[in-house]
Length: 597
Image (tube, rainbow, N blue to C red; front, side, top):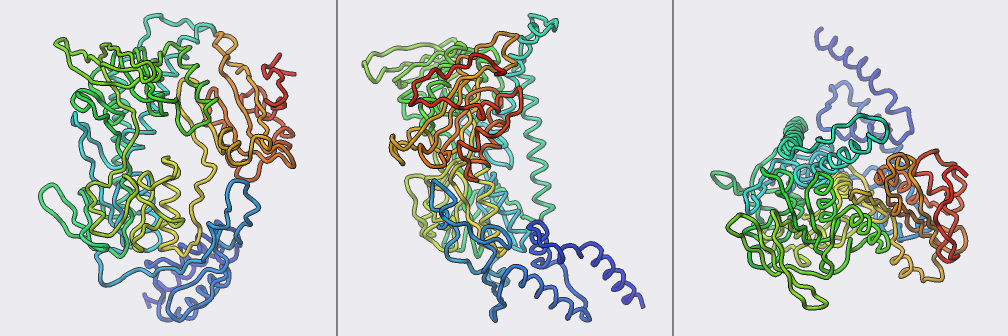
């Protein structure tokens, strides 16, 4: 009697909650079908076997899957998204996108016998966590190994990887603190009575930032527990392609898995000069530094170096940027030089074509840095309170013993194919550790999720690494998506590329009379035909917010004609993209005469 009543209540609840799943053709509801029908948690009463077969038949028919005798399923329609056909190569101007969708994959079934886990993820950062959680949601048994080696001065942190602990999040918070300080002083021009004695408190700022980070660490651990991902705080190294030893605090643990995903990311490099490790710090240390940085030498002019120098200046310190060769290598060089010029205008000096020779600690605690100009050979020296190394990052492959598993590397990175597979079929890599791909958190997250869906969710979708938008959070922010002007010319030829550009004046800059000298944007486009947009570049306030929407448009085949026929939102800086009409080739002045006509 009670069993019959339970079955009846279950049936009513089932129908109410899931009826729409099997009647809607949308991608969202199809995704729920996948998650629901693939789940190993739900089981049917013996009397419901016919209904079970019916639901699985509905699912397979909807997704274009043919039943197989082996228990595996082969996708015939689930490629670009559930139930979607693969896009043609002609839809994308920068790469042959068809290569991302070739060779439909056979779904792997969950291992049940010979291994401790179906999947072990090595690395508790953005890529590893995203992959681990997605794999569990698709029925896999997953463990995540995570271990952070302390920096030379002893800095360490919790789960979450670089982005959460010593990267994107604390960087953005300190950038925001810097912008707020600037805004406080501008407020006087807008009629606010501002105390001239307002100044930042480094200790309070660091405490606030670290408290937020610790809260994210805690939420991440709870999320892993709730999703049934086993978190192992240990340093992993391979024994063979299916076996790993994890060094724990007090002992070692041997772990076996059908598949491994390497997502260990990277750490900052130190230059090979006297005193670099002993007296210098990196971005791994800056956001938890227990004393004011004071007068700081930032060595390196990549985005990390420029961002740190920018917020340090905004917080009232004295940064100097040492540049070995060029600013923002890998970015559009016209935009890079505008970024550097805007920082110089704010009082951040640049030592060009200069390399450090040594760092010495003096009796008063200050650091004497000796350096050399690589063009003239002239040597110089100066004293600083802090030396911050921002000279690049290295992949953390040293402790993995990859040779035991047969995995090959390129320098300190791992080469993968379009499925993130290494040269060993059951070992994969995602995130900053892979060779030749953008080292950005959103890239790592999406790549990790897609890999897990291919391994355990029956998906065929692969990561598209082209046209990834990014932002450099300097005082005047720079954001871009697509090709730089140099790369467009190299790829298509100077005669086939048109560059639309213009300076603009943000409305909010008028009253405090802020400099608009470097507020600039450009669209790099095809010269003929539909004038397909190859790249968009923007230097100005809230750059990341501006470029994100345009990134989706560019990936969808944005043309100059579409851009200039889009009505802008006024008064915003984003609308300036819709007002672009002057080309570099024309030689006309790109400076606007007014803001509203």
